[in-house]
Each structure stands twice: as structure tokens, then as C-alpha cells.
Length: 589
Image (cartoon, rainbow, N blue to C red; front, side):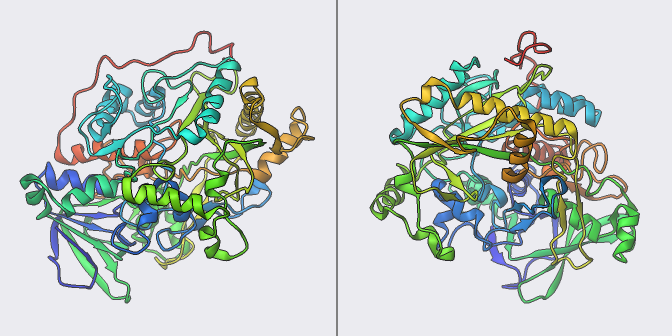
């Protein structure tokens, strides 16, 4: 396999498949098509490799995740348009611009969502092949879980999934789980298994070696550095180009036949696909590329003098994202502060100015030498899922507990503290991706339209109050010093005050999705409706959001679409069932 920058050397002009975007989905697609389908693949990535640079460690050390989110070297670094229902704030939207895409800079939380999400998908798409029993085999195919085997876990797949327990902060992590139980919620042994609802340990995409398990590391690099003859043969059919920015699709009549791609010098190249072009550019990039190529709402395209190739009004619509906030407390002791807090005020240099550098050095060396210790985890080691109100059939609120207080989403407060990272998971508000211009280098207009419905406002308010109750349970008595955000004087019972606090303190969960939805823009196999030879396989084709982080569902989706390209389908797991709470119509817990 060749890994090179576009323009560095000549390359074959035709491949069986051209894949745009070597992200969470693109790496999966490339791996499966060359290894299981025997096809030749050209994989295009606008960003850099996740290895081989002096700072590549930041993309592979789990505890360094905030470095990636703040670094536009590996990040598209988007922002939303001003949000009307969040006091006009513009929210940060980092997206991966690197091999592995957002799986190389996300928080590594492995969350599949709830079984009923996929039962809903099957109805929205109009196909039984996306229900829970049909998608579960693809989760298992992708996964290699380090824990005990179960009917819900995979063993032997490329994607490494594990659990970590950092001993220094284990007591306060355990206190969060106990607080959930004290508040009347369930304990959960495996939130990706039979019972999502409750509190317990979380799975993460971190290998047993302590390294980030991005799709680049798990699917692409085994072919870049093959160790078996099978991998070596597959690698010969794969070419990966970095620093290759796709400008538009190329057509012959109604059939997509290739793409126009630019290198870093601005030189434009045409590359061609014998079978299909597959877009894996994500919920922002895929609709943007369709619109630049004349596929989208005709009225929107005409605003930018783009010739309409196919009127597809769903392109760029139906945008969904999770809105989240932190409930924070200062602590007497036991947190990540001695290891993570830095001095601010020095720009990008601040991330390296640790307040206790001896702790940071020790943690870093433990990871570099042994792949262990404080730096070998994402520190989202425990969490929970609850229902915010009666009438919710399955959990609509998710928690990531952090034994520290994060300010500005990226920096640790220089004091002991802890927080519940909280948000509702099935918003009813819908937003858009729109072109800012016909220039492919100009960032599109991202409008999640957060809190546009009264239902979303009420759900967030209920989530806030439920969280406030959990965080004040006796389990935290040995640790709590005082509330930090909101502070001690905040009136939790005042609806207007709670709503205003959420508007001013919430942020994106970075889970953009659903902008080229199945059943609207593409069919159940990802084929773009109205044209030939073009398919999409990424979070944009989700018809609606799943209940949790989206990286695991995106990988599952790519596995399933890869099989659709091959014309095969795994049999459903007919014994797959899920927990159903009693009397959920009338009871919140």
C-alpha cells in the first residue's frame, strides 16, 4: 500500500473505488473493500497522517485529547452560526482533519446507543435490515473487547475497546456510580449490552496497550504495516493520499465517475472510479460536496450559481447534534487537578505549562515507556444513562463523569473538583448545513438550531434537575467542598433561571449527523438517490441520532455499508433483546 501526499508522485488514474475521507467511516470502508472484496481503492484525506510527526503522540495518547480539539493542524476547527436560542452564541465544532478523522481526536467514548434507536431507524428508513437484531452483528464484527465475552460483545474485530480504572481517582469515580444508585437508579454492568439504563463503568476506544484505538490505528495501519500475507496482498490494492482536498464530483451523464481533488500547491487532479465513488466526509463534508457538485435543494444551489444536477431537497437538512453542559463541584481532595491543570494566558504554549510538571512528566513517561498510567485513559471511566421524565421509554440523558472541573471545554480548573458532563440525547430541533459560497475552501454554514422546540427546552431543564439531585447524594460527602457551576446561591426550582443558565453554559457534544439521511437522500444501502455510481457511508446518512456518542454507531454503519457494496449481509442475531423498564409511561425511575 502507498501512503503519500497528493502531487508527491504519480498514481494510477483509475481504481475500483474512490473513497473521499479517511475518517471514522472511510478507514473502515477502505479496509473491508480491499481485504474482503478484493477491490482496488484510492482513499483521499484532506488532512495529515496520524503518525510520523513530532506531535503525533498527541493523537495517540488518550489523556491528550484536549490537545487535539484545540489544534487546527489536525482539525477543521469549525464554528456554528450564531445560535438564536443560545443567546446568539457561536459554538465550537471541531472535526477531524487527519487519518482516522474524528476518531483520532475525539474523547474515545464507545457508546452504541439503545436498541430502540435502531428499531426507530428501521421504521424511519422503511427497512427491517436496520433494526437492532440486524445491526448488532456489525457492532460485534468491528469490535475486539478486552473484557469477558457476552452475546453483545465482539472478539477478534479490528476495533479495540476496553475499560480503564485509574487508581488515583477510583474512589470518586465509584462515588458517582453509588450516587446514581442512591438516587434510585439502576446499576449497569454493560451499558452497551442488554441494559443501557443505569450507572457503571464505560467502554472506551483505547487498546490494552494504552493507545487510542482510532480507525486509522485499527483498520488502516495494519495494512500500512502488514504482518500477514493476507494483509500484504490487500495492501497492494490500497493507495492512501493525504493533503488531498476534494473539490467536486465528476460525472459522465448521470453517473459519478470520479472526483476533482487539489493538492497543497493548488494543483487540481482528476481521479476516477471504475465502480463507485464513496463519500465518507462526515455530516458536514458529505452534504457540502454534494451541493458543490450540483446535488441538493435547487433553490439553495441557484443562490450560488451552481448548476443543478439533481434536485434533492434533503441534502444538508435534518442536521442533529447533542447539546451538553457541566454540573461542577469543588472537592476537598481526589481529582485530576494535580496531573492536568496548566497555567493559562500563554496561548498555545499554555497546554504545556503544567502547574505540577513532575506529575505530568511521570504520567507521560509511564505512557511512552509502558503504555500505562494516568495518560493511558480518556478519564471518562464511569457514566450513566437515565430517563428525564415519565413517558420516556428509554434513557434520554447521558452522563460522562470526570474527576476534575473543565473550563472552556478544554482546560482544567487549578483546584480539586469533579463534574457530570450531561446532555439530552434525542433532540427534536433540526438544523442545516448550507454553502457559504461555491468556493470549496470556504467553511460551510453550520446551524444545529439548538433548543428550537419547547420539548427540547423542557427536556434539558429536566436533565439539569435530575443531575443536580444525583450530584448531591451522600456518596459525595467525603469529597464535596462546595458547588462551582452553578454556584451555591443558584435557584434550581426557578424555570427561567435554569433555562437561562443552560443557554449560557451549554456546548455542542460534537455529534453532527443526519444531513444526508437514509430514506431521503440515500437508500438503505447508502446509494445516493437520483444518480448512479455514488454512495455515502458516514454519520450524515443516519436518519436520526442514536442515544449517546456517535463514533461507535458510525463505525458500525460503515461496516454494514461495506457489506452492502459487496452484496452480502450478516444474518440477524435473533436472540438479541434489551431491558424494558416497568411502567415507564408513569415513572421516571
